[in-house]
Length: 340
Image (cartoon, rainbow, N blue to C red; front, side, top):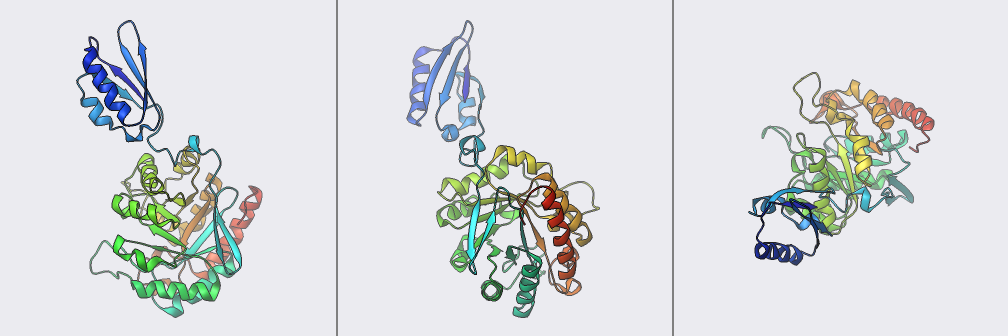
């Protein structure tokens, strides 16, 4: 961080400013020019409040040389992070060199439904089973999920098929129910629920963090930083579409953020084409596009009876369509020397 000072700075006031900065644990270097004094801050500048500095009567402008996120920054961790999950005697991986597919119903509706889908997606090549037990819905009258009973059914499906499970946590009070869940999903609406993110930082359980529907790339990375600052570095980022002005699809799938994130961070990056498009017939094309863009995987919705699904049936693939898509993705992955 660089702090450019105004001309004619009182030296006693400057000493006080420098002392205050050094109390925060950073080293302050002086650079005296002909017309201006510049302070260079070296160390962990994430503790520095930019707005407070700019309000100081000595300061003309503040320039951050490096991004505010440290633990998520590739500059501080040049090698890609690869997460490993053990289940059923097999290892599932998310990260460099792998194109990992997470699949399952939007919401858990019954034991028969989730076990049936779990077996279908596993046979087609999915590495993880997804399913919502708690469902954040725009309407208070829509199906809100089965709650803790839904997690129990997900765990039963895990026993049946051997796939690690991914399900969404909505609030801190639910956390004890997720003890045996392999990866906790933080939905788009909770991306900036900072108290929740802090708590997950202490949990040491892998976190799938979805981008907010109107959030910038930096905001997504700073949300990941909240989790990592608590000591949990097992974070997977997910692009799930952002708000746009056109209504031809549910959201706008921002595939450009995938290579941008891969440049900025070492964390795995996956794509959710189901929520991004809201239309099942678009999902295969956008899944291929995610692979081509360099994503580490996709999370897609699969339902054995989409027409009667209690949640998001229009964007859910049937098991047969999912199987066909997986066969196509394997061909694309082979060209790019990726592993599915």
